[in-house]
Length: 463
Ligand code: ATP
Ligand code: MG
Image (cartoon, rainbow, N blue to C red):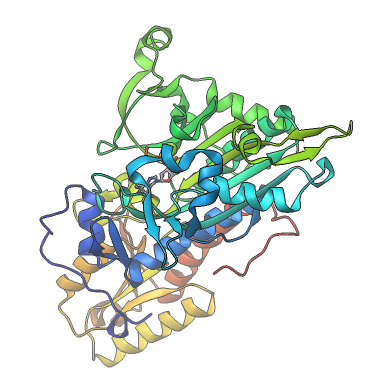
């Protein structure tokens, strides 16, 4: 993309309404614009990051064997009356009446709708296990929307639902989700710690929240620092193997890690003192096993292998896709701007032309641009007729992990400069070498992310 033809409305001033760094940088970098309280338009740069996060979520869901679909944002109140949640959900539910006087709502979540789909089409244990998911906008009329996309009213969420014939199989689904979530967040360059949590209005016993450590997080968290040493890395996981998934869950749930809702000071005291940590965290996902709560209320039953009609065991599992954009910035920035992890960056690298209009500089930039594109990479070429200082400030603010700087002086010696946004280190090298280095970084990244092949049934057309 050439910056002269893009839409990147960067702000010089720090917007006064933004209280936390991610919100400030998202506004300043022209990623979002508020449309109404807690409701945002995603401008082109923000939209690219949102879509990258969404793609990783899709890939890891499907790697775990979960099936994508799409349910609507608007739902009929009738289903929610069946489950009893139409009254229970309270003020956060946006209720709408259509022209015929029918009660509708903008879905805050989809347990009822998916259970209705399930009961209409599935009747036998032979069709299980089944996990369906979608990524769709949600609405919760939060009393205090704040921190930009972190606590919006309209937000983008992946929600998945597992259906299993019995509790043991549903626990495997729970474990499988935990493993796939760990991998999802790692691919985004994040450490999200699973913490035992409180189930709230969804109900049920087993639930973990995934928290990214950040001072601006809304949750108070207590954990054993040993948990921060754990990595999924590129280990191969057989998602159909109950023991493999359970072993990984044991590894991550052995060290103490809880939110204030479930914190137990006596148990925490048993953690060696030098490893006790108390901090704040941003919730970027949650998994639940809730058994037969919805299937009993809504009559979702299957015939088991003994010929009995039993209520199906369910769980639901959410990832805050739009909140993650803010959470990643909270975890990865400096005083000049955002520092995108390679996995989610909106462009793979920036090209800064120090002397637009100089024949040699323009030609070198065009050649770099073409070679990067030919390798399947998407550079953002700052081809505007602007001062170098302004170009650098924009690049630092929008946080692309790599920058190639091209100027007449370097070109006389046959070199350009390659700069890492994270380390700030610059190196001179030939343009060919710079392209090779960037290509290698992303190839390495891609190999690590896909060390385990996608299952055949994976579907790649969502982008
Ligand atoms: P919170 O406690 O932050 O209000 P929640 O526990 O009610 O969230 P879930 O029902 O678990 O939310 O939703 C799944 C995920 O969706 C959350 O882990 C979070 O990342 C994201 N999410 C929830 N509410 C919002 C919101 N208002 N704005 C943006 N993302 C949200
Ligand atoms: Mg939650």
